Image (tube, rainbow, N blue to C red; front, side):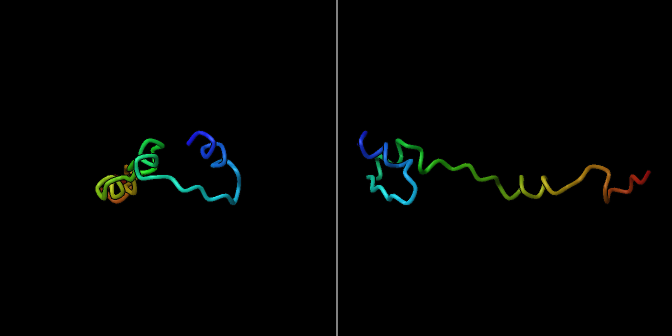
Length: 53
């Protein structure tokens, strides 16, 4: 696997790995935000809450 890992940095090269190898490389790490986090990120403090200045 080590030789194949070196080719991952080569543009346009496809490297087949097993599911176990992919998991070890972090390929299935979930970094998505929740729906609630997305909603909260669009809310701007002081806008639309009646606090006009």
